[in-house]
Amino acid sequence: MTIPAVAARAGVHATTVYRRWGSVGELLADVTTSRFTGEIVVPDTGSVRGDLERYASDLAKDLGDPDTLALVRATIGTGGEQGAAACRGERRRQLEAILERARARGEQAPSLEHTTDAVLAPLYYRAVFTDFPLTPEWTGSLVSRLLPD
Image 1 (cartoon, rainbow, N blue to C red):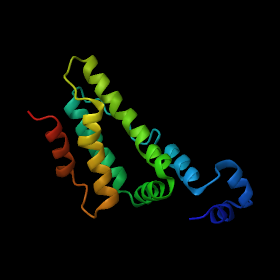
Image 2 (image 1 turned 135 degrees about the horizontal axis):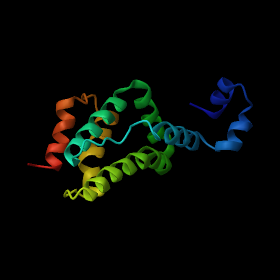
Image 3 (image 1 turned 180 degrees about the horizontal axis):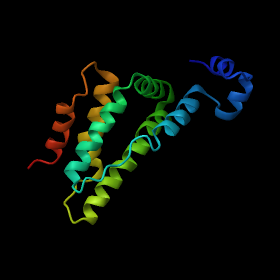
């Protein structure tokens, strides 16, 4: 993927694209941020366990989409830290909303960092770097390890 190729496909001159984004990494980070904002609705099942199970399942379905996965891989591959931030920013805000709502209900909720490490990181790692499937059983096991009975 190159800026000239993007410009040609958009029917504009490459300088127009360079002026707006400057690099492929910046362009992909912007597209990724736009794509991920609001794509997954933060669930409200009434319990932190239910919310995280639904969230992990919805995220696994999203990452299982070939177009989404290609965008994530390209953004991480060319965007450096900016690309990684675009991929994790909205997802961490969504997790934070789930955890804050659980605390407001009086539930014990793990920290955002622990939840990110236990749920978000394995989902992205498995989707981006392996060929292992994101099955419902596997995504459920992530939450079970985070929140043992």
